[in-house]
Image (cartoon, rainbow, N blue to C red; front, side):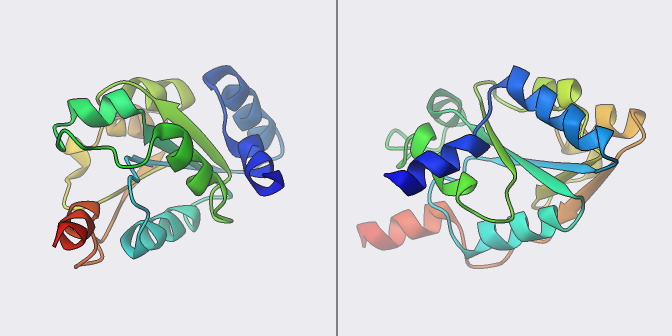
Length: 163
């Protein structure tokens, strides 16, 4: 229980996260942002998060709320792990400095509010398809697209378990 409580110091609400970012920036540090469901954490997630963390001094991870995951149409049984569990797992990773849960379909508004220095997304996206990319670029930031680690996906893991 002590370990779980220590990870919760890295889980933020919006107001607290805005203050934390201001503090980081006041000391000349840069902030990267990435997002996802992170339903069953796997090697592909770890690679993507590590790559995102290498882009700036601090990494913020926005995780879809349970309701947001359901609206994405990933299936009736998703998410497997609830938002609190997913946030705690992400916060336990040394490469992650802050976790915030968002309820919208995309983190566009959250990104527009926080304006990270670097927006990182894994996958086969174009910059134009990435939520918040226009706002980050307009603010002088940059957008990075990480390669996907083939063979690792939550959906594939679920199918394998179901046999």
